[in-house]
Image 1 (cartoon, rainbow over the protein chains, first blue to last red):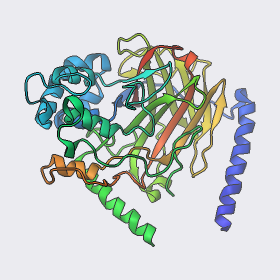
Image 2 (cartoon, rainbow over the protein chains, first blue to last red; image 1 turned 90 degrees about the vertical axis):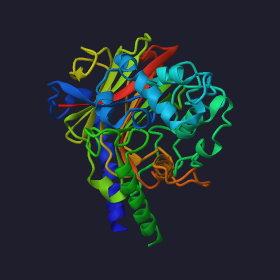
Image 3 (cartoon, chains in turn green, blue; image 1 turned 135 degrees about the horizontal axis):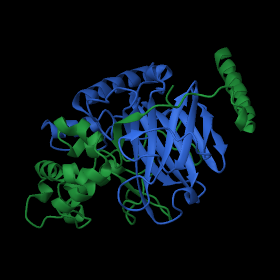
Length: 184
Length: 216
């Protein structure tokens, strides 16, 4: 209990201290060194793309290929891995619920960027809007499973299209920083 | 005691997940997995103030509560949000976040000095801010010129029965369970959250966005 009080006081003090700094933007106690060149290690646009669609020997290369070069370098690998993974694309003309066949779907996915609307609802998929952003609460895995395994109308391979984990283990906040407090 | 058991159980599942290779982007590739530059997730959504857009980058996934108190951002790792608002998948704007001495410094949105795999930090821009890095449960946030900033540990917002997915992929099981079990329950990540006015990133239309970690 005593510790909690001390922590609470420390947090209060640091908040106050920060406010002071905030009021004096030009008087930082020291000027940090930001020089040098930083070289790419990891990158991500849409969830689970590198994990699911990139072959094991190519995952580092995917992370260090710029998005504008990813389609040419990886689309055919994505298509091979998709058709090997899912029976929903086994027959000629097979499509997912977005009306995309294996080539078209992997053509979208291989360029690993998140499409985000600046004009309204942002969601990975909410039943109406598709790929207009990604909310914390979006069940992105089930959406991806449906697009990979669910066929033209989400009804194919029903045992593979929902992991039945539909929400986070902690509620999100309605205001900044939105993510739930850590487990301590 | 019950909680401890729960945590230990989750730990074992997390380790099992680690061995198989994971999830949203957690430990996705050999060169980054388990390190300070490993991105676990990326989110972009409209803010509580609908004139704003929120960007979230999470790194260093599957942190147990005990590991969380020892985890920290590396001063050699730059986290860079990339924004393409011309449709060519090349970044027109970046928001850079880099820690120094207990604070996370943010630069941008600003046009990068160069696009692609190498970056220098846009120290000459007047757009950005700084926030004390949070170390406990209470989020320390700061604001500057309509932008909001946070950096520190948070509950991993990702949820997925990854353990069962691995069973399916390895041929050990034909289906998911109902109900499933969230492999990421009870684990934390290190988060960088920045909220910016949409007017600073194009105003309207659709952007393409992605996050990168870059090391010195």
